Image (spheres, rainbow, N blue to C red):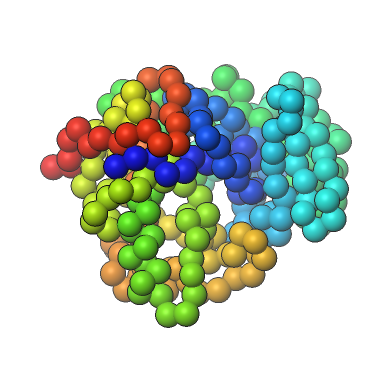
Length: 268
């Protein structure tokens, strides 16, 4: 097995960036989901509320983070050093502090999305601990829905696409961080626990329940019923439809496309 692709999503629920290599940190890959849009009450905003967020594409240039609206190519540079106040923000059941970037960023994103939002940044002082029952020791996560990393298996996507009638689902729908290829069995990742990717140890701690964002075409923002309709027929656990594994990394380092992926232990 080896790494097929690596992604980061600097601003939660906006477009992703495909990388050749990525730096592992406790909260996820460097610059992954460290920025987020919130409403006036500090509640996180995603494509669930506004599918058009997928039209806003982050990219790095000369060490700076920029966002381009692909509908009109309008581009905004985000200050790497936030200057705003610290405010309370909420992601699902977690409430914690984050720092506002600046008023210009708020205005640009609000104008683009057609409703009032604020851009916030997760500083090192933002405390968002992971659930203790899933991680070997106390650790923090980013603005991600739950866990720092999402690992996906190309064989599982291939299996899904064989079952879907007349529509191809891209891996981008599932917003993974690490895509693994060379696995013979679809959904073999259900049983993985300890992994070594390159030289970096990971733990696959929990299957990932998928939401309606997967039904939004990231290129057109059109909504459909797939892949949830088909996945629900054979990947439903309780009320959740599963695809991919939530994971944590156990040390800092670099992961590269082409790195070997070795399963060291399996879930009991």
